[in-house]
Length: 253
Ligand SMILES: NC(=O)c1ccc[n+]([C@@H]2O[C@H](COP(=O)([O-])OP(=O)(O)OC[C@H]3O[C@@H](n4cnc5c(N)ncnc54)[C@H](O)[C@@H]3O)[C@@H](O)[C@H]2O)c1
Image 1 (tube, helix red, strand yellow):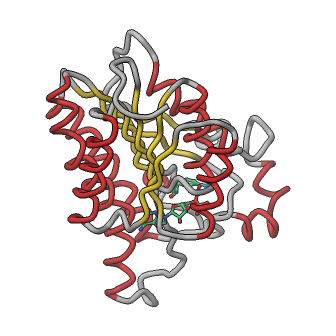
Image 2 (cartoon, rainbow, N blue to C red):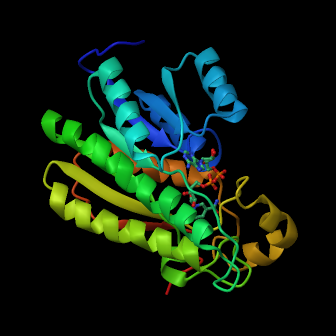
């Protein structure tokens, strides 16, 4: 399946090579989307693309840094050239930062904001004109419970990550209003999800973390992907500017 068949639905997922992003790609593929997979160029991205293609799915790799504005403009243009439309944008790429204020450097602060917040801006800026032009679209941004809680002593990431992820919530709410009624913009705040990003923490404190979660289990990438699929496909859709906590009840208050 390639080209721009009129009923083809197209999604872009960033941070798509592994973890939550890859689970989102799988869910969207099963829902009938062609998916452009944006991630840093790496063997992991190549392997994920190859595996999905051997399973018969239509995927398009986009190798590069979401923080590079010009590159993202080019990548969005290449998706539009190939498929003619972009229906769903999942801004999932993210990195952690374990350093506190006394240890972090200016460069490390800039990097976490560049990947986790500017990367979301870059892709929103790149896809919104096409979505407005085609008369519809959905943007789903990956924030974190840390945006609201400020993290915790044992969290993988500290304040700079929390700041970037809180920025994603403000961006989401602002763009939901600005791009309405054509584009729905929502965010997800995952809680503790077992991926490569959190593997060390999970190995060290799995049982302790599990006990703090009312649903009594650590989340999986598919726990997040199923919510992405819901926001991407629900019809009719009367949700925009919303933030969904997907954390097994850990931060219910
Ligand atoms: N795992 C959790 O518990 C958890 C909790 C809250 C929020 N999140 C968020 O969910 C998202 C996915 O997390 P994950 O656990 O799957 O992480 P992960 O590290 O397993 O996957 C992240 C992916 O993003 C890619 N990436 C990193 N920097 C990039 C860049 N500059 N440009 C393009 N791609 C880049 C990585 O190569 C990787 O494939 C992140 O935004 C993360 O902050 C995760």
